[in-house]
Amino acid sequence: MLVAAAVLTLSVSIEIDIAALFRRQQKPRDPQVTCGIKVIGYHIAGRPGQKFGYAGETFTIPREGFIEVISLPRVKHYTVDGRKLPLDDGVSALDGFSFRWITLPASPVEGGIENE
Image 1: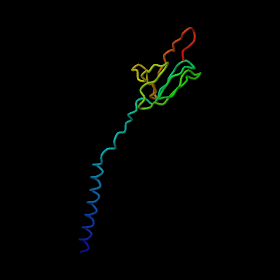
Image 2 (image 1 turned 90 degrees about the vertical axis):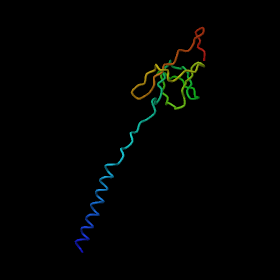
Image 3 (image 1 turned 180 degrees about the horizontal axis):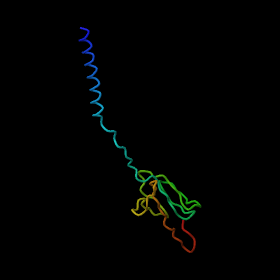
Image 4 (image 1 turned 120 degrees about the horizontal axis):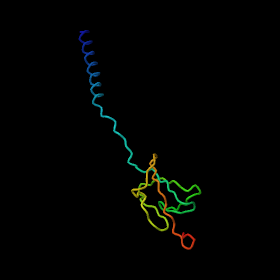
C-alpha cells in the first residue's frame, strides 16, 4: 500500500511539472510597444525679437535666434504676422531628437519700420 501511495504521489508531481512546462511554451510574447508620437517639439528660428504664436500663446525669439517648444497633439499651425502657417509643411527637417526645425518667414518692412 505504501508503494502505491508513493507511485501515485510521484505521478501527480510529474503531471504538475509537465503542465507548467507546456504553459511556459504557450505563453504569448510580450507586445511590441511603439510610440505614435512623430514630432516631440519644434525648434523655431527667426531674428531676435520676432514674435510668433503657438497654441494660443505668443513667443518672442530670444537673442540666440531660436526657441524650442514642445509639440501639442492637436496644434497643427503657428501664426506669424497675422498669417496662419502649418507646422508640418512637408519640407522642414526632423533632427535626431524628433524636433522639427522651422524658420520663421521674414516680417514685412514698410519704410524701414517693421509692422508688429
